[in-house]
Length: 81
Image 1 (spheres, rainbow, N blue to C red):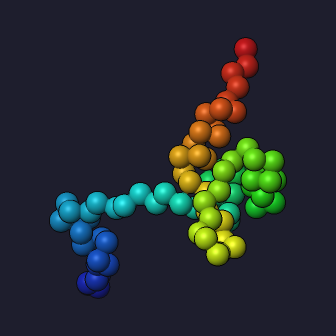
Image 2 (spheres, rainbow, N blue to C red):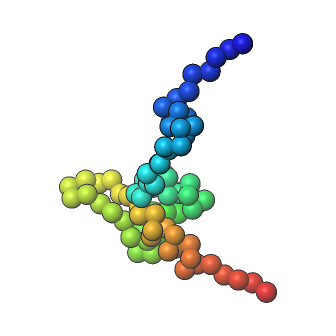
């Protein structure tokens, strides 16, 4: 019989103390995966000011707030009859 070693996360989950922190800021790649669009499609949404970005002063890297991504989804929902 092979004994399995649990990871720290698996051990905490088994003990009932697993409380993951929900990630709020996504990179462009992560946001593109979340929305199911290519990275350049996300860039175009940013450039056309459809989705705001979070930038640290003096840094070129852009992050997208999950709340803004959710708002974008809700705003663009359409019901067809």
